[in-house]
Length: 76
Image (cartoon, rainbow, N blue to C red; front, top):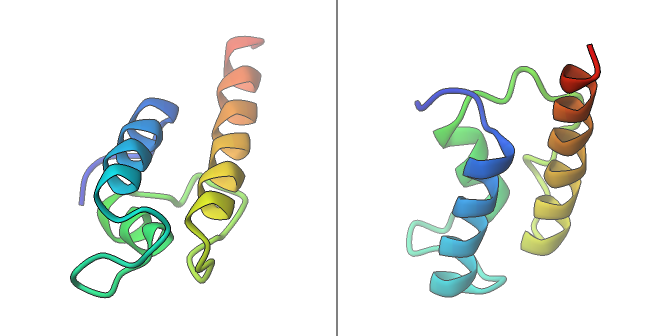
């Protein structure tokens, strides 16, 4: 497992996924959200999209969460 998921890593993973698989599952039958939860530490997230099948919905939900977290950290 890699470190915590960040805005940068999420955006990178989404770009690679979208170019490779679009909205579909990958060759291992994983959804985008399942890949994120398997590959990165997500314990700091308030949202759980592990069971979200739609790639775009999972990405946007995670993006909003990470954006809000990073904004809150910068305002401290």
